Length: 407
Image (tube, rainbow, N blue to C red; front, side, top):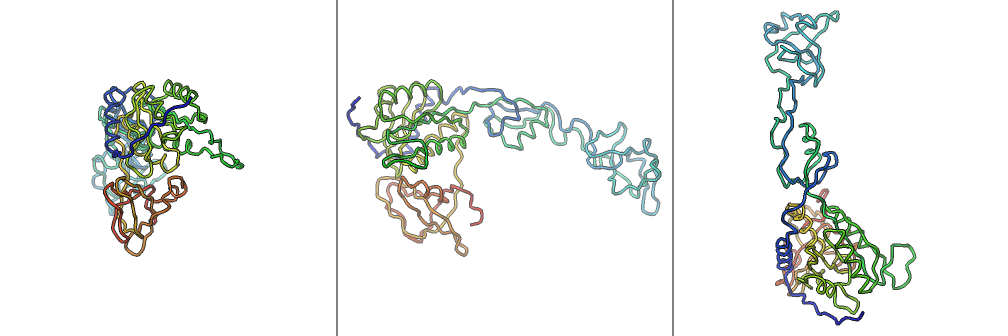
């Protein structure tokens, strides 16, 4: 099927495009009235709570020994000293306990085993008195029954899971993880292999995008490679919309003769944006079909990664009921000049090195197809649309792609 070429307009600020995209999704109900599901706490790492979670029981739920030793009635130990040790009859005046054991009824203190001498397995000898509550964990010391443990919209950490279980909570209501379809396209795209023919391009973006989606809380599925065939792409998109919550179409987002994505979105749904003023990532497509977001991601790896970060990431987080986290930032001095054309916001990958007491950022290769430049980069420096770049030696903000440890 031959289609007229559609010229995209790459002068739109990406922030404006994103805001319109999110606004349309809110209006359609995609980001409102979110569904919920109940799952075992043991499977809830990283999941987002759909409602506050309250403790079912206190922790501890009984007075517990906080040390190995002997449980005693504090008042019976008064007067014990180095000069006048006190003998206590085991099982009557003192009871041997281990850490975590319930405190015997009527007893109110624990003396550490290191401070006790035992005689004939019938007598405990102490040289200092105890005070009520000594080495005893009272009921609710950590958690009180009915206490709110985590609020709604909270991403559960390993420590949260431990706290929930300690409070008797075994099931939790969470937001479902968004299901994401990733459609690699292009007649020249082939599955990864060690012997590609000239002109064949190994499909790697699908796995990269799937890994990003997983990091952002989604459940990705990479669909089979779709050649440059309008009807086949339409059929695949139709299936993806039936099965998933978000669709990423990789490649075919520009204005070439085989770039069908924009026309397909326009014909079957609502095309909001085709082209933004960024470098890389200019030919991104944002649309809504059947009240679900469809993002046309450029084929170059660095462009694909950036567009996913700018547009797919916020959608996935808001779909789970939480705000997308901001990247950690540091200040660094540019090791060499960055020149950038006016009119497009440029995302420049940099390496970071410590030189004396300052951090130096050195730009890496800026090609949109150089995936290893992204893999080896430590961070990104953003050049504003109305700037022509930064001179060497200028202090800039670096958005970290990896922890700064060791630098």
